[in-house]
Image (cartoon, rainbow over all chains, first blue to last red; front, side, top):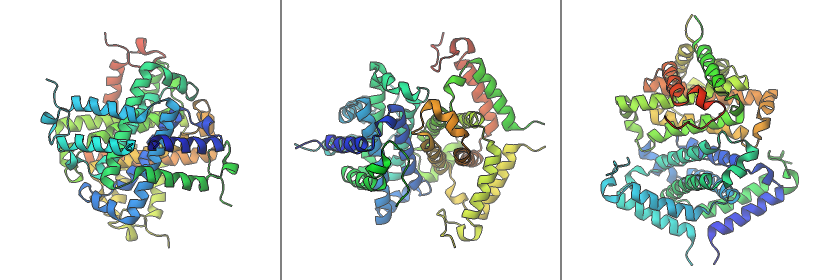
Length: 118
Length: 118
Length: 118
Length: 118
């Protein structure tokens, strides 16, 4: 069974090639695309109080809009990684390990700030 | 063979639970996390000219830094989707189909702006 | 008495010229700089609940950090406007007028969403 | 002659008060607003090559759109500073001085990376 991320990347490559958009998709431009899509997802939540954001997200109309905004971030991230030669899943696994060391479970429990290194 | 995205989400759930960080991870806060990580990736490229950004990315030191920044975006995006109940791969497939209709291959070839609807 | 924004722009021009940084400061790159600085300000608030963000901001150490992050956004915005030939104060006045019409006081009272046009 | 930034802040206060929007405008939400407006400005430039971005910006239609996007960033930045009690012009002057020290003119000439501290 093929990997989901690889499959999605294949679809995106085909989509881009059909439109001859590789010329626009250098890593700088795709980094901009990721950030502007992240800004659109952000805009959805800017006036929603933290404590209401789960319930707001569960509303079907909001949920669909937010899912498609998250998809836009994911699409531009996969396009970036494909162009930049980044193995996204591998980099995420590596980063989670780095985070495990920077935020030890004991000293980080219930605290979002990085504990002082010992 | 299990799906890569599902596997990564499992690892992240465990990482978050060990630190009792669910309390910080409402959808609003995670949307902010995505955008701030996207801003860090953006910062890497801000002074690199478009035409040099592929070569700059291929430099091993830059490549590693950029891969870990992309991983941070991916991690916060998976955390968001898990909390918001969004099937990221499914939403991406749906969004690619929407884009196929909004940007027909013929009229979009080599043009990054959306063609006028007919 | 000279205008504050004009004075700040003068200082920035001098700072940039002394370092020969005009070559990096095209509008595209400066738009990226604004967004990455905005991402840093955002990062400060990502785990603070909405209802606590005023109090958190009033803490002297947080306040100073946040003020300098806001300054970075302001600096890159002035650099952008100077390069792009945008009269920032004039554009803000114009945009406030546009907002007055899009969000009439009566129908927008206490609602953050745009009222349906009549 | 009154200061331009103060004048603009006054207009914004009035605009916000007429709509009873203070309730939405805590510092966290306004930091999100700044970043999402910065993302919209970014979106304008994402497919424009660095070397063409000055010329693209000079086109009257693009110029007007970009000016209003910059205004949105400025408006949300002033709203943030007003709510957070930040003297924006003062913070910018302070930050420029910090930058003067971190990026000495001699060693920073023509280089956008921070020189190693001596």
